Length: 232
Image 1 (tube, rainbow, N blue to C red):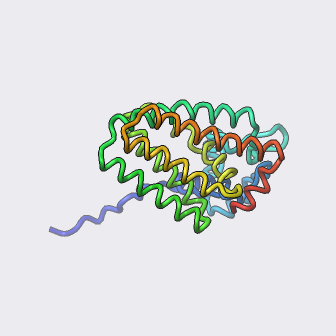
Image 2: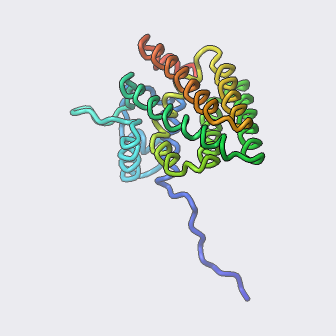
C-alpha cells in the first residue's frame, strides 16, 4: 500500500510560535517595560502578517504583559507593587496548600521528580540561564500541585504564569537569589519527603514571602529595568 500524500499539519500554529517568541522577548528583556510595540516593526522582526501580530498583542494584553495606551498604542506593561503584592498573596495561599497536600500524598516518584527539578534549577542558576530557571521552576510547582492532586488550583496558577514569570525575571537576577531560592525549595522538599504537611505549607509560604520582599524592594527603588537588563 502506497504511503499517504496527506500533508501533516504542525502541532504549533504560526500564531502560537509568534506568541511564544514575543512572550519570551518580554521576559528576557529584549523589550523593556514602557517600550512601544510597533506593529509594522514586529511584522518584520517576526516574519508574520499584521493580523498575526495583532492577535498576539491582544493575547499578551490578556496575560498582563502588554497594555494599550490612548493615542500611543501597545507598550510593554510596567509592574506596580499593588498588582505584584496581590499575585504573591495568591501564590502564597495556593502554593502553601499544594505543598501541604503533596506532603500528605507524595510517593517516592514525586519526591524524586521534585529533587531532580531542584538540581536542574541549581545548574540553571549557576550557568545564569534565567530562561531555564523560569521554566524549571514552573515544572517544579506543576509536579507539586499535581502530586497533591490540586488540579483546579494549578489551572488557576497557570492563568497567572505570564505575570508570575515577569516577577521571576525581576527577582532571579538579584544578588545571591539563586542560592537562596534553591535552599528555600529544598526546605519545601524536605517537608514533603517527611510527609509533614504543616511544615511544607509554612516553607512554601515563607519562600513566596521572601521573594515578595525582594520584588518590593526592587520596585520601590525603581530597579525594574536595571534588573531585567542584568537578567538579559
